[in-house]
Each structure stands twice: as structure tokens, then as C-alpha cells.
Length: 358
Image (cartoon, rainbow, N blue to C red; front, side, top):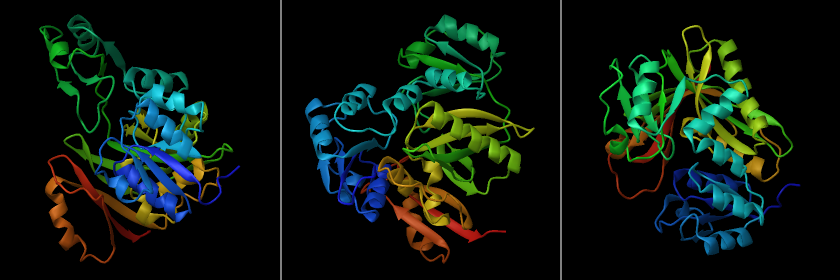
């Protein structure tokens, strides 16, 4: 049954994704309550209510559950125990299992391989000796990552053409946390698919976006991606398979490497609305944010079709100083996140240039 207008949707996390979810919820007639420890957060400028507390604070979670008809979240590092505790009191979408899978890179890749979706080769690494063995297996090259909590290029170290030995102290330097070594992938481009699954099992997938990263942070997403239709369909099919396997409700972002023959390797999944889907605000009738609210509220999913080609670009740090010039462009949609201080590496907003479909 769908939520009636006026119901409150709880959102764990008060960043820009929570802000954009709150905007879409308001457009559909819903109220929002944010759980976020930072008092001056982007989402609080839009939401009807903020509970200022840690994400795993039992009293705050109980308050959020009591205030909400359904709870969602804007980032994948929400404590699984917190989400699981909420389920006993209020529906939580996407389900906590999606968090559990996505929060650990080894669990994530094992899950993907288990449902028939290929990934880069990988090895769990807990000691310097295991790193030595893993690099030997990958001919001296690979990307060492923290298994948990890494994002925007953080928690990573690259090895290239190195002999498998002499890595004493590497695990300590990485924080003595569980690690994963992933093999290099000879990819031609990176793409992502934003897809949604409703409570009734219906699935809607947007066109794949071609993504370019700088310093580990998404720089641009271009639609259409420079891929053949067969590759695009394979990406959408893989996303649908992931949604079904997780009994998922809501929007998911799935990143892929595209190989020279057009085949795909899944890179990672994000159980939430995703930066590479911001283009849907400007180039589709229905954005990924409204699609997510529709899904978790039990409403019918809308069409993911786009009416325009586009390029979305993030405004990072002092890029926000470009705003006056950008606003002079006629076919550009700007979205600022309400952050007072521009810092290096901080996402301050994004803009999307649209053009007529060819």
C-alpha cells in the first residue's frame, strides 16, 4: 500500500543526497525527518525536522522510527546494526542486507560473482605476507583498498609492476584494517547504471552514463555513453539481477568497467541514489531522487526515459566560484548543496548541460 500524502519519510544522513531526496519527497507531498549528527547540514535546510545525533544512537533511532512511516538512507556506511534495529519498528528501504553486502568490498565482489556477474580478480589481504602473495598472483600490480569505508579515492594504494616482496609495514600504513587487492582491469571506459525496484518488484533502469574521475572523485557523467546497445542492455540486465537478488526496494547505482570487446566487469554497487545519476534531474522527466521516493513510498515507478543528451559535472571545492559564469549558459541546470565552506575535494554542487538528442 502506498504512503498517503503528508506521511513522514525518515532519512539517515544529512548530506547533499539527503537534501535532494527531501526536495523530491516534498514535491510528492511528503514530510521528511533527518537523522544527522552535524547540525548545519545540507538536508536540514530542506527537511521538516532534524534529529541531531549519531547514526547508531539508540534513542535517536527510536525517535526516527516513531516519527516515520518508512526510513531510507543517503549513504552506504550506515551501521547495519542500526538499520536492522529499525526494521523491527518501521519499514527500511533499501533492506539492511544491501548495506551488509555493499559495505565490505570482499563481500560485495563475492556476492556479485555468486549471481553470475563478473568482477576484477581480487584477494583478501590482512597481513604483509598475504599482500606479497596476492601481488605475486597478480604479476606485481594491483590496487590495494580498505575493505570498508573507502570513498572518493580514499583508502587506496596502487602497485605497478613491482616484484612480490619487500612490503613490510604496508598494512600498518593502511591502518591495520582488513584490505583487498584488486587486479588491474584493461578497461576502455567506466559506466554506471542507475536503476530502481519498487515494492511490487517492478524495475526501471536509466540509460548508462559514461564517467570520468579525477583524483578518485567523479568529475563528469555523460549520457549517452560511447557504448554499443548490447553493452548498455547488459549493464541494465546486471543491475536488475542485483536488485532481484537483494529483494531491493529503492534506487541503486552500479558501476562497471567496459572492456575492449564491449563486455563488462562490475566495479561496485551503491545501495542509494548516486552521484553519477544527478544528470537525471535535467535530462529526464523523472529524476533518480523522485524514483527513489516513489519506490520506498509504494508508488508506481516512473519512466526512466530521457528527453535530452547531457553532461553532468561536479563542482569540487573552489569550482563553485564558476557559478556566475555557468548561470549565463542557456541550456544548463545548476544545483548547489548549501554548503558554506568550499574545501579541496568537497562536493559543493553540480551542473548539467543538456543538448537535443541526435
